[in-house]
Image (cartoon, rainbow, N blue to C red; front, side):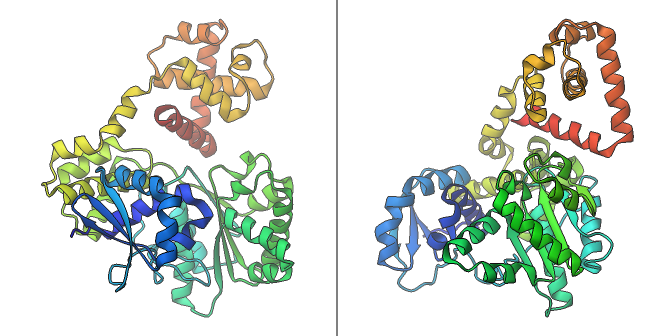
Length: 437
């Protein structure tokens, strides 16, 4: 009988949750496991679960285990008669009343140049909620620590004053609860839940785009809390002004406080994150391997830690020492994906066009309205930054423009990056998409 690190099992559960969605907690709350040879034994609380689990989730479970553990297992399902191996979703991990995850604190958040501003803003809000920075709006790509900071704010407040009433909710959960409240005619109870809190933490606000009725409810909830000087923290993948499909009045409210962007970690921060994880979990992975992971996984923190966990899982399951050859084997899909991506002017034009809601044909045309000309200038700048194309060739790829037009575009965007932090963030995000998608 074999056990793998509980953090690796949590990573497997994360993979499963992406596919299972809102039913995840019902089915996987009390799931445990054991490994017997090449069989991954899923331990379930009763016969009902055993009868239904394999039919519903067998392929999803197998794919998740193979992806994280890098080993193909047979999967069987049994009743956990003694309950000794129940290590599914830890009841102590999440406070049922406020949805806060206890392990996310300021103490274990690794700070670097890419996240020092949102980290400082989060601490300021935690120390003085409802005052200067209300709302606090944190934006950035997935897996960079936005959710960690939100829970850290809530946990800090609870530690300082256990009588406070914080509430964390994803926009998807907010939506589902409101729909259910309308169906059951319990809207007053829903409003009472969210309008009588001391701190509201709303994750992934972009999920409300296009949902007019939900936006209406959120707007009034926001107003009630703001007028009562209760702290509001919101996260998104974009700044408020770029959330097309949200009502203007909501965008105005979200942009009325402090806006903080969180970026992909630089190499020093990635190394620090891996060292921290390695020390916390007592993995014993060498500095050489940590450096190798940090150099090759540069997209986000979730994938960075996931790469470390995959290597440790592979070592546990094969009973082999972790060395550079093993790391290269385990991360081969990451390295192969990087090699497959060809960065050329078409790729850049396609990604920039999509970001700004125009077509590649618009970018190559003679059209000069600002909503086309500006993305075109950004794409020209990125072609110069990310390819070996000459100025005349870049001009040719953008509808046969003169090289002086390309120089003008490059100079303009270069100056904007120096003077405008939002432009700097936009260029950074686009570079990441061009390199990683």
